[in-house]
Image (cartoon, rainbow, N blue to C red; front, side, top):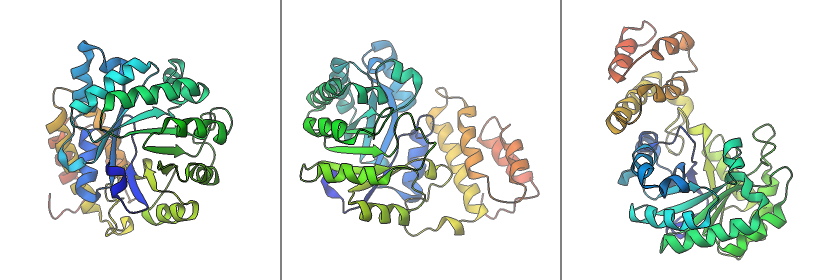
Length: 322
């Protein structure tokens, strides 16, 4: 099992809906590969439906070998659909399966998935067991929160441990708190102490801003790994210990932006429109004089060629290698 192959702490790219698609994951793997990469989450109900299966794979589950080990994250509330989806994901060659038990989205929760499973621990345990049945030899992990409308570490985590997932990622806020309060790292540390001796890897998640911070937190709270999400947006060098983002030049950011845009087109032409890429333009092009004006122009680009033309014609930019 690959989870045992890493020195502590290992680093994981978080699943971010609308962000960590195949192009983004490949860009991160190119500039500074983390130890493990997660896909965006996909619905087990959709994966079990023959009409939507191929579309889901094309849209969310494409990957290449540069992203290994790669974990497909799935969500839902029907145990049998988890079993079938895990079996199907295994056939696609993924290295592992993760069950989303933490998403706070109202529509997801209304369907009994994501963070709603914190309130139905018996169902959550059944889902893990069903996913493991379908996964065969693939490791099955869980990503969750420290509670739903209140912190409930012992009752919730102890139930998860009973089901013996191979790893548990804990986001250090409740569903109710969303991202409105600081991460409760002490509570994540409590999870690590409860899971000690179980053989389950405990991964902390919540607004880590640098590798150094992640290393310090992991050491302080005795965590096996750290998962990072938003800090990687616009910074594909995040996991590269040899790169200090403060020293990344504007030229390097432009190079990464264009590499990302061209890759997006190569992977998603006919599947996703280019406007889905625009969130990345804002992330890459910030932190310099005239950035907002340039971004406004770049956001009008219809493809990577227009993006490059706007950059080349802009007086702010001085590029050596485009």
